[in-house]
Length: 419
Image 1 (cartoon, rainbow, N blue to C red):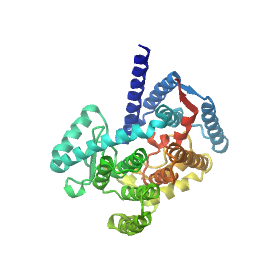
Image 2: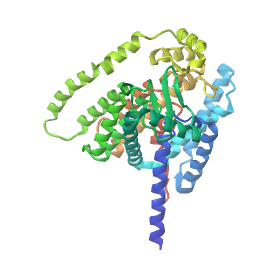
Image 3: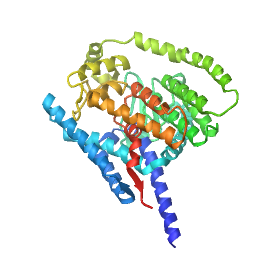
Image 4: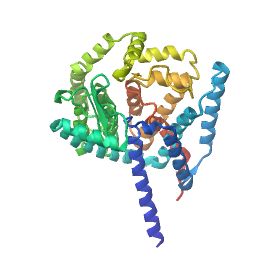
């Protein structure tokens, strides 16, 4: 009887871990505004915290560190800028931090297994639905829009967003410039194909770790999905993982693999999708004032992107008002609602300052080292560190659970399961 109870408890814990993996991914998709609602975040924090204290031993030093950092930020803002932060924004920021810590603690050393498993299943779904989207574009889009409207998932419009057709149904999203097949790109469950490639590259990395760098069906599916995203960042992230694979794969004649890798690297980097697109983005950049004026004059046209280079430069300029502490707890970034900055770097520094960036880099390094060197005993422990920073520059995902989960993952050492 006792062994049956232990087995049942173990199965329940495994189910909870699996559900949390899906929670982590789907709430990070940025397709559904509700997931950024501070009521939702607060409830999630309370539920996860209650579960944590029921099943895990907790070193309370972790809470002391979080509270100390919050107090330091609030005092710094009040003393140097006379800013009184909004309670709702403080709750939002603290909730993301605690959710990241809590999920890391619950998944513990098995987190790579559960997240890779969830990514793979969502990738299969994306390939099936993307195939249907190519075959029946209008029908698929109208069906997804109907589901979106019924469930009130938000962000659904035809020929909005400067011509884009956007909709989602929680596990799959559409974001394309027109209804021609040539413009179709696989968004998966994410708001944009390039951001979906982050999860695909994480899936490849985690699968390689779990299976001792043996190629398998999962790797093939992930590679196929990356191709369907037609994403520059996706391909560049994939190159990083190939290098990690070459460094750690135990094979004869490894030197010849490196020789073969170099021309492939040159071909990918110099391809129109990578080199020409990056060059075009750099040459076509405008001043921040140009984008601000365009956003004010075209409020009905949908979202306008400031671009990564101009957007980060603009946020760096605004960060000089409070470079060290940022604007922690402020209601929003100082740009019009219909203007976006497709990067996390500038907005993060504006919100958390140089102090926040330093803490993020230290924490991210520790998490990457813990995963690669401690958990899997491998070389090139900077792979997760570099991959995360690459997407940190490329996409705006500060307000997602995955953003905080990865750098704070090393804090799982403060928690342990009761036996």
